[in-house]
Structures are given as structure tokens and as C-alpha cells.
Amino acid sequence: MSDILLDVQHLSHVFKLSKHLRLNAVDDVSFQMKKGEIFGLVGESGSGKSTVARCIMNIYQPTAGKILYNDINVCDRREFQKHHKMLEERRQIIFQDSTSSLNQRMKVADIIAEPMHIHRIKPPRGRLRAEAEFQLSYVGLDASYLDKYPAELSGGQRQRVAIARALSMEPELLVADEPIASLDVSIQAQIINLFKHCNKEHGFSILFIAHDLSMVEYLCDRVGVMYHGKLVEVAPTAELFSNPQHPYTQALLSAIPIPDPIVERNRKRMDFDEMTFEREGALTEVAPDHFVLRKEDRQ
Amino acid sequence: MDELLKIEHLSVGITSTAGKVQAVRDVSFKLHPGEVLAIVGESGCGKSILCKSIMKLLPKSAKIEGGKIYANGVDITDYSDKDMQKLRGKLFSFVFQDPMTALNPTIPIGKQIAEAILIHEPKLPKEEVYNRVIALMELVGIRQPHERYKLYPYNFSGGMRQRSVMAIALAANPKILLADEPTTALDVTIQAQILDLLKEIQVKLGTATILVSHDLGVVARAADRVAIMYAGKIVEIGTAEEIYYDPRHPYTWGLMQSLPALNKGKAELKTIPGMPPTLIDPPVGDAFACRNEYALEIDYHEQPPMFQISDTHFAATWLLDPRAPKITPPIGGKANV
Image 1 (cartoon, one colour):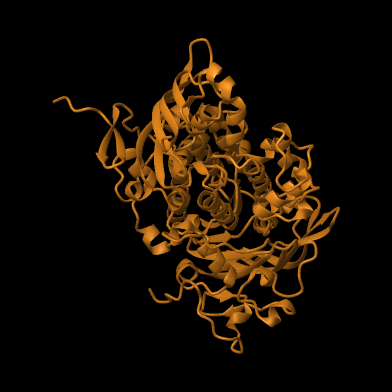
Image 2: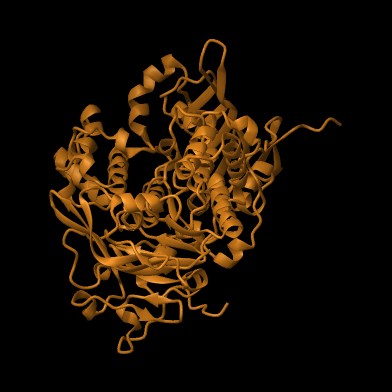
């Protein structure tokens, strides 16, 4: 077995807005994720990050391209049907907005136990409730939350319930779509630590989607930068942050806030507003493992 | 007279079914003309309620229970709604968190800005109003204002909408701008622009700004002074340099340490254990004591007073008491950089 867990090849997704209007949300995106890797996907809103995540999770059927998960083409309906139980169990997603991704009318215990109930998995800790309690303690909430409804929880607590639900299946691939965007700094740190722990101790591979670059720099092994549906740069984290090649990546990095008033006040920032960046060409390798979208030279 | 806004021992309570929430407890600070004061704290620490109580935009269930608010030296604590209406917009105005809901989707942007001008000067001729709107749009960095005057909010991106909201807020030349998490709903790239814009406006118009945020990283560029709020109280206040380079309160240390920029290469991000206390029945002593690894015995019995560190730097922690044991702070200590 190869060590490539997820292989996205020339993925495109087009939304038909009306009869004539089409939106290329994702345009010819290719990347690979190794087993046990944390891959970060960054870009501004509307750049197609979430669409990629949803294609990987089979929520959207891509217009073109292939997604190989453990060498199974999940975009092919027949192949997906054949493996759907395995795929549904091994891949889990955490959505950005925990208010709408948790059922308002279910108690926390039932929310966490629902995937096990659906897949008829015998809970390792006896009863479903005991299992839910364990998962909840894992994300840092105690048993008193089991009988609460999502509306009674704060944003951070709700997001942790959503994470506990995903973790309860012990997935191989965890897709986290801006899981910390709406949380406080100190709670963000707790969730990030939790992801790191899951990755290290349990070997989860995580596709981490975010627009907060400082968190991505801290957490991820490799990072892909998206701009208007195109993947413009892929590189190992340290390489990307020290040696950004694509102008959009450079502009994005100049926007990260630094918690140091004197440094921050003297820093120059690029103006984004009416700026457009190159999005033509093909990914070329400029350094080992470092790919940048570039127009091929004519010579 | 030196300060634009002076808050003295302000307390705000909110009645709820579970009991009375003491959202703001004994808060005092001053705002000088032309400065940016950032108020930083976790959600639920009372920073929004504090802002709203300054503007008297509190919900019906909330009430100012004690303390005084002086604006321009005048006590406005007991002002009626009618009196406040004269001050809103002229003396202070508000920029809300979410530019998507703050604008009316059925009215063109230009008209919405004109509306704000006309409320304060109803007899202004049409031409004059139009010119003022264009000037405002240019001020907040909306390019091609003539073409964009007639566009609707849905034609605008998030950043542009937040700029329009700021144009509305600045319509009557307010002395104080209260910005309640103006960048939370925006992308990092746009967030940076809006913060720069706040700073620019402050330089151009001399407007004093209260910038509310939950992220210490975000306010570093814009803020002159920073106040750290926890459980309804200001626990530390000082100039940006003092707070970032020489923080004294354990909660400020915790906030700083949880920033990923300061944790490069470390295996784990430092977190603040536990949750903030509920303010329905706040603890007798220091509200932060049970999450504080440096907590002293006295923290559980008595609230610490504000200790003065320098002319501008104050912190409420017993660690600054001369009798307290000496500890080395985990970060900071770069007092004179």
C-alpha cells in the first residue's frame, strides 16, 4: 500500500448560477495528502477551499477530475457505492458553523452517539452514553453537558461537540472546514492542541482549512494556497512561510498580524483591493516539494 | 480638560431568568482625544455591553447600576433617550461587527450615507449632501465613488461594506468612534486593511477610537493603549508597548501565550485552563483565580485593587503587592525596548 491517502487530480467544480452564468469555484486543482499528514488549505473567502472539502467528502459531485482515496475513486458512483460504508466511516468532516451543523432538537449525548448508531458500531465503552461521555471528556467538556441542547452551549462548546462527534468514529481522514474561525483565542489554542494530539497519538490525517495563517503555520505540515479556484502554491509549511514565491501568497503573508506593536506599525502591507494576481499556467516545482503556479516559459 | 470620555466605577447588570448577570463590574477608564484604545477580552467578558452602555444602546433587560459616564466633562449617566439622540452620531458613533446586517439591503449605499448626514443637518442642499457623501466615500477608501454611489450593498464585498458602515458612522464628524469587533466577520487580508483605515481616520480627523476585539494579535498595529477585560472587569490597562512587552497580569500572559506566533516550534500551544466564571454569581475574590497557575491564597478571598506600575500602566493582581512572592513572568519583562 502506498503512503498517499488522498490524491486529488485535476478537480474542477462549476456552479450553474443561471442558464448562462457559471462560476468556476474550483478550477483544475491537484494535490496529494500523505497518511498521517496535516495539510492546510488557505485562501480568502470565495477562493473555493470549502468546495474542495465538500467534493472530497462527496457532498458535491465534481464537474471534472478524480479524487482517489486509498486508490478508490470516490467520484465514480459505482466505485463509491461499493465502498460507501468504509468511506463514510473513515472520513469525517467538521463544519465551520456549529450552530447549523448540530441538530437543535437533539441532546449532546445523542448527537455524539448518532454516527455510531447509524453505522451500528458496538461502542468500545459498553453503552452509547458512556462512549459519548468519553468522547466529550476527550474534547475537554464534562459529563454535565450530556443532557444539554446545542442552544444552551457557547460557540466554543458547540464546536467541541461537533469535533467529538467526528472523533467518535476514529476517522482516518478528518476534514476540518474553518473549525476555529468563530472561537476565542484561548479556545482556539485548545482546539489546535487537540488536533495536534489526535494527529500524533492516533495518526489521523487532517485537511485543515483556514484563513488564519498563523494557526496554519503552527499546525500544518504542508500548506496549499488557493486563489479564485486555483491552487497557486503548495509547499512544506516552513518553506512556504520563509520563501513564498507566488505574489498572492506574498500578499497573504503580509497580512498576518504580529502581536508586537513596534514591529507591526513599521511593517508594510500590500494593497489588495483592486489587485489581481496571476492565475494562469501550471504548477512548477521551484524547490524540492515546493510547487508554484507559473506560466511556462516560451523558450 | 484633558479627556474626552471618562468612565468611573461603571457597573451594568442584566436581568435574566437564571438571575442577575453582572456583565460589567466596576470599570473605570479615560479616553483622550485622538487615541485608539483597544479593549481585548474573551466573548462574554462584557466588552460589548460596556460599549453599548456608553452609547446607552443597552437592551431593556440591562441597566446601569452604578458609576458615572462623563463625555466632554458632562455627566451623561442619567441622560434620557432624547438627550442621547443629540449626542449619537455627533459625539460618538458605532461601527458594528457584521457589515452584512448593519446596512439596509434595499437602499443604495450612497443614499444610506446621505441619510446619516441629513439626520444631523436636515436643511443641507442636495448638492452639498452629494459632495459630502463622495468625500466620505473617498475618506474610507471606496474608489470610484461617483459610480458606486448608486450601487446596493449586495454589489459590495465584505470589506467594502465595512468601509461603507464606517462612512455612515463618520457622517457627522464624531469625536469618538466605537468599533465593536469591526473585523471579526472579515478575511485576514481585509481585516488588515480595515485596521489600517481606522488608524488613518484617527490621524486625519483626530477621532478617538475604542476598538473592541478578542484578539491581541489584531490590535497590535492600530492600538495606542490596550485594556484587557476579564469577567466584567478591566484587569490590566496600559500603552500598547507596556501591554505587549511588559504584561503584568496572569490573564494577559495567558492570552499572549496562546497566540501561535509566539509558540513557533513548540509542541503544544499554551492554553488557559478552564472556562470563565458565570457572572450571575461572580466569585468573591479574583475572578481569574481558579484558572490562574500563579494564584495566591488571598486571590480567593479578596478582589485585588488596581496596582500602579507606571503613569499609564495599571494591573489588578495581587502579584504586584509588595508582600507577594516574587515570580518570574513567563513572557514579557522587556520593559524598556
